[in-house]
Image (cartoon, rainbow, N blue to C red; front, side, top):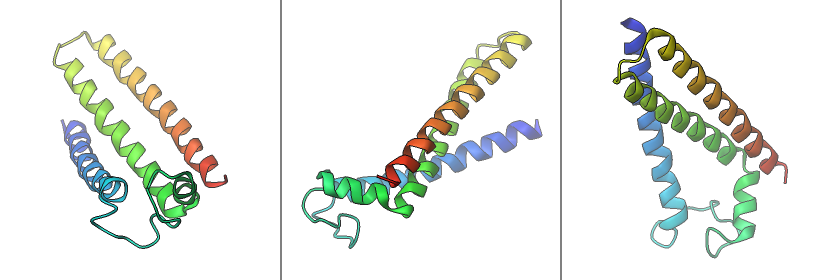
Length: 123
């Protein structure tokens, strides 16, 4: 019971992190003419201009935010999926298999996404 409460708390915290970082993403990418933030689009112009994309990818700040957002989104989504599947009340062995599959898949995706963010920083 205590473990489920901790995981649920982490699930809610991940939702808050997602809300914050997606809000930041929306501000940088879609409200760039309304909210002018220095240094986020160093080349000026549109946020998806290649020079701006590369400049953000090289930024340590953005690399960290990408990795944190990736981790929060994966945990939030996969834990939510796990809870939905557990509502079907599968057998104990199937619950373990579901948990293992989601954990393995989530960790694999996190490693690939983190690797991509690190490689993009070195472009």
